[in-house]
Image (cartoon, rainbow, N blue to C red):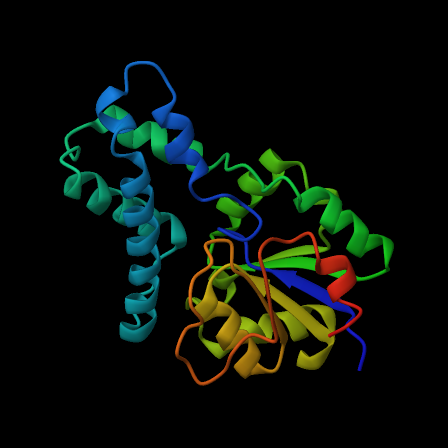
Length: 229
């Protein structure tokens, strides 16, 4: 069955989650942060994800903006910068303006030229996603932006993946789902999507019940790959 719909995770897949910390580190007067920003960015992202998983398990849902703030607070405190309120506010501001990876616009344009539906399925809150899409200038290349807030639970709950079929009227096997998170790609494969893992960090495959259908280093191969899945 041919693929009709291409769905992307947002953070880390289309948008560079390290961009906020990297850009802040380059600003004048941030010498202390500049020496620590890579580790802070990694801790921020890890805690952000861990808090989504824990909240999904316990049923204590909040929106992604809250876990983004909570993850940053943990990362800054771990680095000894927890008292720098101005730095915290600057990093949060920059998170609303994350850069898209450079190949994203051309890749989405090529998929649209093939007549495919394109969309985002993300843990992000709707206003966060709107800010990122607008900042990256890719809104015209997306048919929809779907947020977990409509079901009040984070990935990898199956209710989240159900949103794609409900919106686009397609079966799981008609969907190419792309994520930079190995666990997300694995869950999507288990759900029945044709799952592609954008393994930018060259990490090992997660030991989970399902594995992605394909692994790519970035998003450039997708307009060709979608014809092969």
